[in-house]
Amino acid sequence: MIELFYWPTPNGRKIPLFLEEAGLNYKITHVDIGKGEQFKPEFLAIAPNNRIPAIIDHTPADGGAPIGVFESGAILQYLAEKTGKFLPGDVRGRTQCMQWLFWQMAGLGPMTGQYGHFHVYAPEPIAYAKDRYAREVGRLLGVLDHRLAGREYICGKEYTIADMACWPWIDAYDKAPFDLAPYAEVRRWRAAIAARPATVRAEAHRQMRPTAPMSEEEKRILFGQGKKD
Image 1 (spheres, one colour):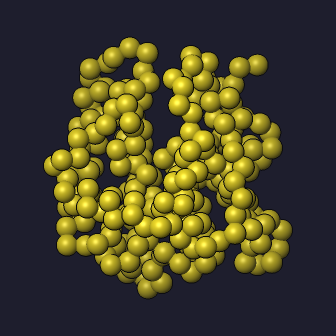
Image 2: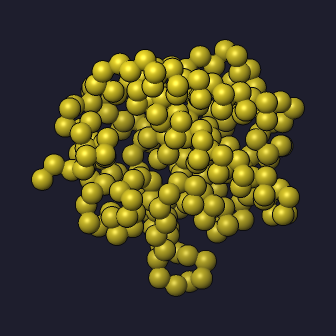
């Protein structure tokens, strides 16, 4: 059984995509990052970087003690290797999949996150930052759009952890929607994944997403200043 420490951020949403597709037995433990629950000692023992998601695999493949894993990319890789699913087994296919997984972790996620911060959460508008990250997100979407041309999914005909990693980051901010009109392949790919039954089940967990505006205290906790004592 997999215990998933979850909050409905783009990174958090990746892991239910895999768990539902693979049919793994799992339970969710909510970590309310607006309340600072990511700083609790019991969570830090699993995820020392105080970020969700994290997992505990209570039935690891070696039959030993439970294994904790943090970082969404590492979790996807771990689950793929555990199950033998959604990660190609041949060296060329695996390499292709892993490089796109790392592309998301190092590029699409962080740059889109900064876009969201300066367009949605920053206390005052900073034109340079808004323009800089909007341009970079546009560039990265262009890279993805080009990659998807002639391919059903990022790595070809097969749905992989690379798709699961990238998909939640596409137009992730309702209050600052990114113009996807120039990226026809991204829109086609995004809709195809959204229509998968496992995606529908995974996304149902987002129902507990807060709808009220973020408070100043929540912003202080989330944006790197730590939990209030």
